[in-house]
Length: 113
Picture 1 (cartoon, rainbow, N blue to C red):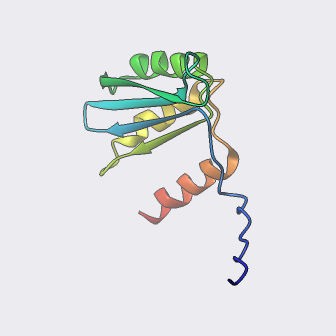
Picture 2 (picture 1 turned 90 degrees about the horizontal axis):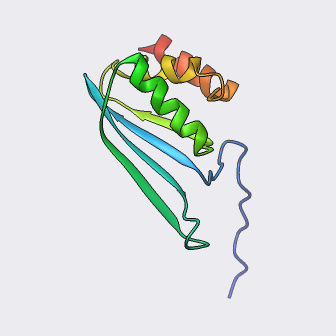
């Protein structure tokens, strides 16, 4: 048997333990948070908010909850530019600062659109 090829992770390939994803629609978003389950070591639990209004106050409230849950990364999925209010509201939240390279990548994507 031949030896397997070893391919180290790239700098951008990071596995986060506590993540949240927002499926953005025009007036609301569906949010899923995945974090370790304290009752079952080695397992994860998902928390889902079905209908978070796309309003700054509600997004800021969500940001505080994500901060409380020690979320390491937030991803946004949107088919239009409805993501902007979510991105900027979460970015303004002091403790949910995106990493610089993610922010720059988003700016490049917006500039290219």
